Length: 590
Image (cartoon, rainbow, N blue to C red; front, side):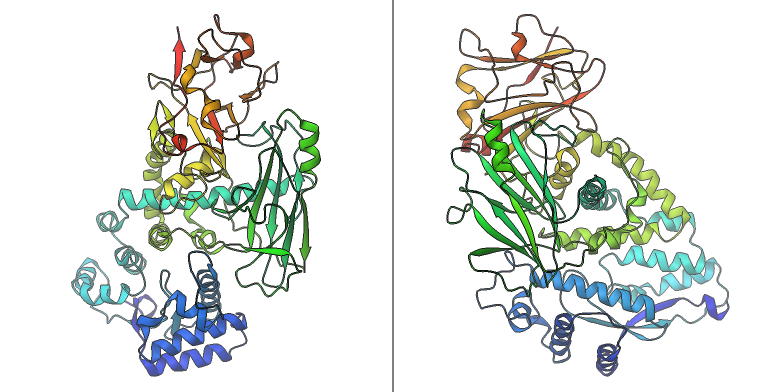
């Protein structure tokens, strides 16, 4: 075995080595980090050196480093998590560019704020590099694993990467070190949720005239996006800030009709809804969207809203309520302006994909970039990101490993696509009860499902969506067949909302409206629907009008093509929030 093939492992640096590395790093002009983050780094290292690791918490960092008050609440103000993410990126970039083999390295492991100083070391030669040497090395596993466990929650997979690169891992060993099915499924579904938002950002900004910090006022009745909403005047904007800039959003006063200005982060989590229900003390006026570390001095009477990262999506909805002209006037009264000149980061690299042919193993090629580009506020983010890193490490370990993961995903991906509308939330009356949207806590599968089927879901206080892809016999909805949704007189949708309801028919798997001669894509509270003599309501679905049901109540489908329905309830009552009310089942008429 020549010197170049000697395997490199790591050990923890001693205190003297660690202190010397910190001093060297902070003095190196090539270490690109803000003064704020250098202060952050110095603080956590000092506490570490003094043996006070137990006290290195988000609260103490926020108060001692970032000047937050004693009332700091990390679940509301994510400054520490965001700055920690930036610091990790700065350290990674520095050591990738300027790190030397055998030198000390400083890292900030995900999920905690205690620094880790490590130094590479070599494993002594055992005599040849054949399978006998590999067995000898594995026999020293206690030492190897204790070293590796400080660097990752999945030491097994990193060990596989190291051993494979040095010795040429056998197929049997590779199989043993590969991620199990649950780890791979969790990692894929979790990371796909972020990738779907990145795809949306890239696609939106390719549209003519669309740019950051500029409102797009969608024409009334516009259908050129996923799962469109024909019940409202719709506006949207991608917003971007940095610590030295802010976006001012002006919301007009709106009375006697539903409206909201919904702000979402880069994972699809709702940050805020601006309306009279959620913000009764300031339902309209000027709002400043700022970064967690904002240094901007805001004008008076402007309410700050702290974003989770440097980018956000704003969606405005104003109910038409039989007055489209008035709704359009209010739509254009929403305004955006910018204080300062934000530096806007490019979206992370991502291979193009569509819902019909979802991305496969390529998703893990830029896992680090996808995760580092936006903070995830989910309580279990660190756990899931560890799984992503473990899979990404394994995928990058060699051709055989990459092929193995690609083969597993050939089963995982179709299963996700098949079950996305049936297994990610309560399933009642053959409808998925989406009383989870907008803010998902630990339920990453539901978030990814929402981003896949109809991105930018809102929270249950504002709207609950009921998707359906199967009929009352659990057969997939087929545009060639006739169906009826029959609401009993005592369970009409009008009775379970404080605003309004709607139902829309879209194609699968792209979730776009289906063209038809009537240009009829949905029904809502204001549609001219005819009730039955007993007060019940029937909605017909099929390629042609359905006998026995008024044509006014017919939603056209595309002959021979699958479809999905989304039933929306706006400002739903408690019976909807608990899923005790759902739409009537979609029943085939034979």
